[in-house]
Image (cartoon, rainbow, N blue to C red):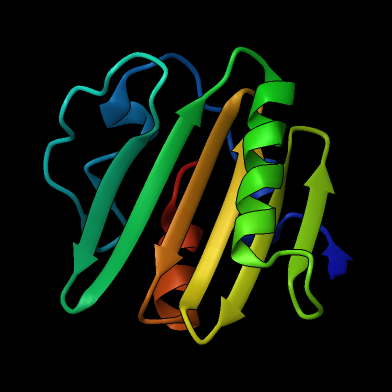
Length: 138
C-alpha cells in the first residue's frame, strides 16, 4: 500500500455540508449525469449511478455523526476492496482520507471529507474514474 497526498486536488475543495442529496451528489459532475435518487431510509447508504456515454460510475454516500464515523466506513471499504494490497494508494489529509485501487474489476476510489464518506467505482477503469473524480466537487 502506497501512502500519498489526497489525489485530484481534494484537499483544496470545499467541505460538504447538510443532507441535500442534490448538493452532495450533484445531478451533473463534469460530463456525467445521474437520474433522481430515491429517498433513502434513515441510516442507510445512498447510491447513485452516473453516466457519460458508455462510461458508468457507481457512487455511494454515507453521512456519519462525525469524521470518525466516516473514517470507519472508509476502513471497511478499503478492506473489502483490497486496499491494503501492494499497489493500492492510501492518502490522508487534515479533512479526510482516501483509498484508490485499480485492478481487473475497474477503478475504485473511496474518500472521506469530514463526516461524509464517498465512493466511486468505474468498471470501465482508470480513465473513467479520473474524469469523474477530477470534476466531483468534494
